[in-house]
Image (cartoon, rainbow, N blue to C red; front, side):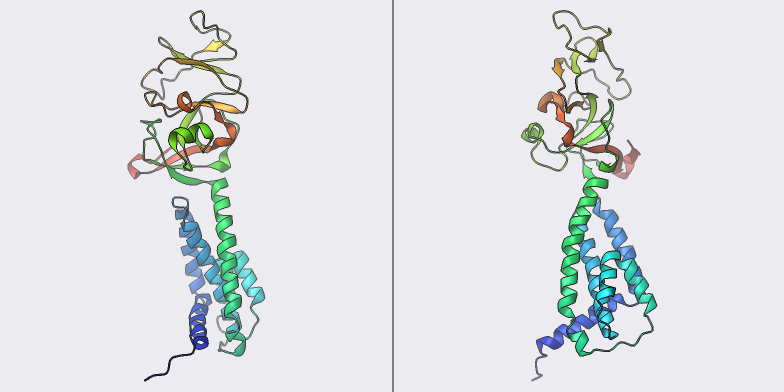
Amino acid sequence: MAARRPRASRVTAWSFRLARLARWPRPLFIVLLVAGIGVLAAGWRPLVIVAAATWGLVAAATILDARLRGRHGYIAGLLALAGGPLVAAAIALAVRRHVRKVSPRFRAAPPLALATFLAALVGLTAAGFWVENRVGFTDVVPSAAMEPRIRLGDRVVIAPIMKKAPRRGDIVAIGPFPGAVAVTGIRRVVAIARVLGLPGDWIGATADRGLYVCSSAPRITRQIVPDDVCRFPDETSYISRQTAVFGPVEVPTGTVFVLGDNRQSLDDSRTYGPVPRSALIGPVVMTVWPLSRLAVR
């Protein structure tokens, strides 16, 4: 009966296999892999963890490979941890002809490699989520409020990095806030809608003329008509049906009033009230799925 291989030998064997990831030209291919995973992570967040784990494996492999060449591997590991597979590829190219051998120094390396991998996994995952939340990501449209321009189930690109002071007419993604969560439930994007009321506005709709926006409280004891206080914005470019009667509603400081282009849907401020500016994630810049509806918004 064959003797069972000691645990230490198995660890050394697996460490030796992992060290091969740091040998030229493997890290170069991993650069492309991590880049591809990073792009796809904009559509599916868990892939951020996969990209971080891949990055960490390369850094750990760089340490193990350095130990095979008789080095401590601290500097190489830190460089690969900070610069990722691209730096690991540069190191691999520089040392591709160096002699490698298993030595006591190499056998002591797995704990350091494991610590490096875990540090990369935790740190880079947190950094990846932070960057995604502040730069851009994709999400599925949660309602039919913006049809036909943006349909329920479309996947759209949301760009927090392009967030600015809201302007009338902007199409924005809205994150959770108490009024919306009570209607839509908790999700990353609770609504996609168009900003039509700014702080200090009074907004509503009449039966004959549709949506109006006033700079001060309109006199509801008389018919609302265009004047120095109230105006009726031209919405013919984005709605097909007139807005049902509502309001007037005052838009408080620090909030905006949003409406969907599909005015038959009430998934907007007529249901959950003015939206705090802090709940505005960023503009919706394009539809990416399905491909038949690919368009810049």
